Length: 107
Image (cartoon, rainbow, N blue to C red; front, side, top):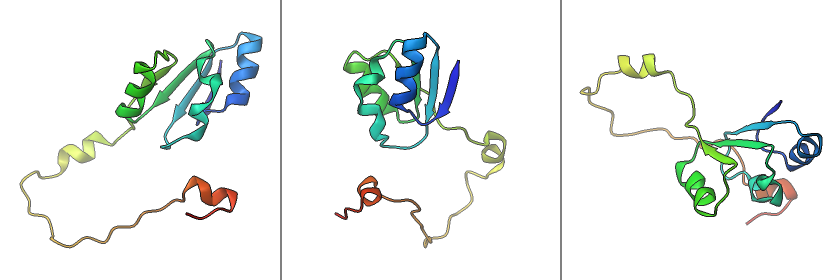
């Protein structure tokens, strides 16, 4: 078995050729590599956290993609009060980049 964070079509091709199970956990969305013909390789078990993305693949007849939500510290979340009032102002930060920026192209 080979495991990776994020799907890689090249790894899938090698695993398919060698008849080795390839399991990947995709925690990024969108993961452009998921739109490769290699997703259909029977060696694949690809987990995505986005339920609607999973449904798109399922509805397209692709059985190698499965749904698995992102992990969370449920004990910490259970300790949070559901009745306490929240502040009305928030500081929000989005960290990351667009995939086109990696190719030197800007929108």
